[in-house]
Length: 131
Image (tube, rainbow, N blue to C red; front, side):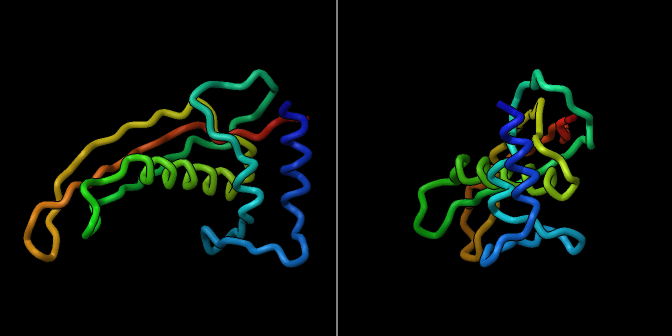
């Protein structure tokens, strides 16, 4: 299963004609296709790997003008995508043993009324599969 992922990641690192890339930092450009290949898991893997680094991500979503509350799903998707981007920048293939935590907070809007905010914190281990 992971052999196919390794081959796909190796191919995804080569630029393709007409493929858009997203810059996540000044030092690295990561394509959306490569980000989609990076798996984020709350468990480990059975394939041999080396640890690249421990990584952390944070994101939030706050209640909009016409929304009835903060959406934790939006914040979760954004934080998972941040983990993927950080892993890709470090040259990793996956993020394992992830832990997620959240909190609800109340912020103030420009109108002076309270707005709900959901914050999601995540960390995990970026790994590179061994060949």
